[in-house]
Image 1 (cartoon, rainbow, N blue to C red):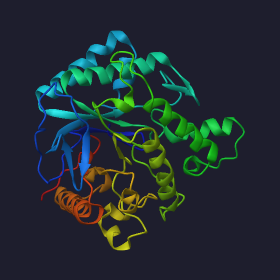
Image 2 (image 1 turned 180 degrees about the vertical axis):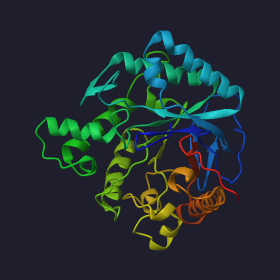
Image 3 (image 1 turned 135 degrees about the vertical axis):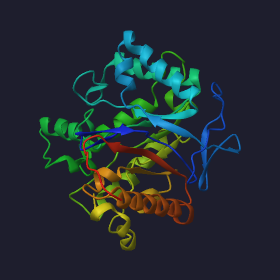
Image 4 (image 1 turned 120 degrees about the horizontal axis):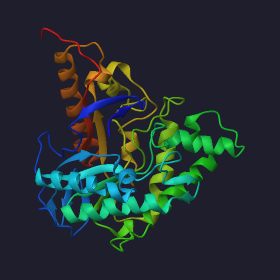
Length: 339
């Protein structure tokens, strides 16, 4: 997935490098599915050995797989990815309201769509591709937190805007129920509960969470402090990430210099990732979108500092692995520079 504010689409080589500033082939051959990925200090491990990987984003898989006649597309993507040495796929485990919704309304689910996700997980097993499953979205695409707030407003709750997702007790309850529903799901194809399936590498609380009404990042910090233990109370085997883009916030002032053009979105990638139930850190990188009108040299300079600073944080402060979970280049801007 690569979408900013739900509008701008990108050509993405999306995902996952990590643990080093180099791209490494996964140490697991296609079809090998034994063992759960673990976080050991600042690296991932599988069965006691380092787990280094390349991967990709395909957010659409569950919805496409909900139509049996279209499932060949999932098989094709996973087969080709595996053949190319891509061994981790990040995709969505949510669709809140709207067309082919997984969660039609709070607590009401479409079994056909859930079976689509069952198929995605079973095919991932077939081709030896681990999955990172995001549980919600910051944006209205696939529903996300705007839909949760809309449900609360329709039920007569006093909500002011989308950022109430982080503070309203009813909305938080709906999100917790969704987490419980997904993690306890029994796969109708494999017969394995999601929370027990080693093909799932990790959960993400949300794709690109932001909270613009509170630039101090306190609301976001309190939300993660509540939701991360909730996930772990149901599933303490799988890894858990926040799903962040990597923007620095008020809690650690000297790091904000690394944000593109002074971005602040109510998150802080250090304090939010320091919560003990969070197992790894993530960053996203869209320098040509974040630095509109700047030269390619300026963007590359920013990108080098962006990755290097987060890599240093993960090693020395967080002591947790780091994933570059999204990156891409925009098709929108056709500006040429002489640099």
